[in-house]
Length: 321
Image (cartoon, rainbow, N blue to C red; front, side, top):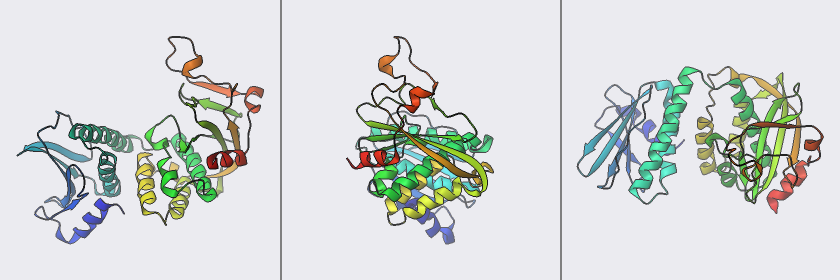
């Protein structure tokens, strides 16, 4: 449990506005947890500075959020309106504090806070509207399988490895360990062997060693669900509380929801194929497209792709180099 969850649980027997506990005491801003008069979880964020820039708060459909001036600063109050989202709310609060704690300037911290709030507002909205899609579950399933395998291979410390999982942030890379970057592609075994590339940056190595891990899967009652793979990863992280907290944060950002039927679908991993992105690999990157082309999505297939097939051992050895 993160620091915010622990404090709300400590206040369970005193659900009234006069009782609150502080979290993240070393942060540039003051974070307090409490319960509203109606018994709802609340986060109070107090920014005590004359340098706070003007900012707009995003709108939430399941969190009441307000900004008020206070002597010497600004107070932001967030009240969770739907108790079933309590766990995600505490992870969001942790995310706000954790991602802004390294900032030493008020402007920098406020900028990060608003950016994080915007992403969580979109996440909560999507959960209400349509939830995580089947294709998103398939993609997450592949990323988590690779994480599980990398942990078992001990390619890096648990914290380093989970921090290197960038997929939930929408980065160009899925997983990075040192100077090695891994892009994860997950597809059904019944489909043609091909790679769908979503941007000009996805295979742009920028000096890193880049591998594509293609996972071919099939629906199976005897397989595992994305929820079960996530739990397996979390079990492997049990000796590292910091890695566990980071994993929980990213799982929430990825939109995984045990209330979604898609997250209970089971799959077998039929095949794992590794490709090395070496000189001559068929790819589009900013340096080899005509002037004026600023975005592209494309597919790679056939003999030109198979020429760059590598092995799992080569990938693992690269992470230890």
